[in-house]
Amino acid sequence: MKLLLDSFWRAGAYCLHPKVIALSLLPLLIGVALTLGLGWFYWEAAVAGVRATLEGWSLVDAGLTWAESLMGSSFRSVLAPLIVVALAAPVIVVLSVLLVAWLMTPAIVNLVAMRRFPALQRKQGAGWFTSISWSLICTVLALLALVISVPLWFIPPLVLVVPPLIWGWLNYRVMSFDVLAAHASAEERRTLIHQHRAQLLGIGVVSGYLGAAPSLLWAASALTLVFAPLLIVVSVWLYTLVFGFSALWFTHYALSALAVQRGQADLVDREPAGGQRAGNGEVIDLLPATSSTPSSAAPPPAAAPALPPPIA
Image (cartoon, rainbow, N blue to C red):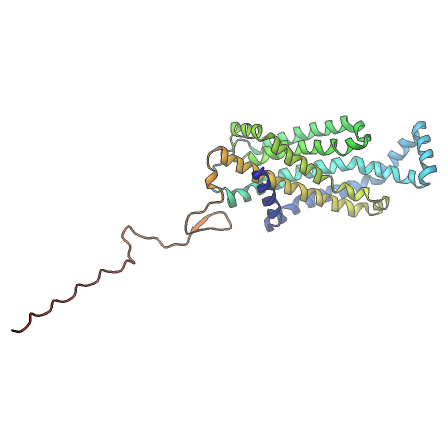
């Protein structure tokens, strides 16, 4: 628990680091561009398609008519956009996770390693292609789990449990692999993930619940649909920020656990005496070089001169 909390507050502090803020802009720009582009070309067609599908089913149409009598005539016009948003939200979340994993996580791992783990050996247990393949496989499995669990979403308690658990599992599988890819060997990675499975899954689940926060923007009011383009940008930014924090949390925890596993816990955050770590992770010695015989030692005091003998 101590390591879990220590890595949590360190991840929060690192979110304010200028380099982390700059790294978050690239996934944000790509995600916003893709989301706005798809919304610009397909929003009206998607809403019209959902509305036509709902009205094409006689049973659903009867239910909508009954709901309009209770909630007002605007219910039918609001329902279709809400369904489109509900279907688009998982896609935005998956896109944010993948962008953070591919663009931010390697740079975040390097930043944390240089500042906290300069002595931790990099064994290159997995390459770039392996990480991408692993992320895609886990993402497909998570999407399948979401589709299968859709009927459970209509049960009020489960809708607050099932999706965050699935996102937490996705975070746990993707982030744990990526943050250890460079430093741990394949055997070390499997051992560490097995020994710390509960803690890593807990980090993923907490991040999954934090990732559900942007959805509250859409649930606040039906009037938010008027500001859909702006809210899409804000949602992508929040998703990027949450998963960037998640990557930092996983990095601090996993690299600390790896140092303990290798018996190098005493080297974490330790600098040589008289040394100061530079911004690039190097250690600069501030003390001058000294030889084996100190040159600054004071010379021995001279012997007092002998006094002449007394006169008889």
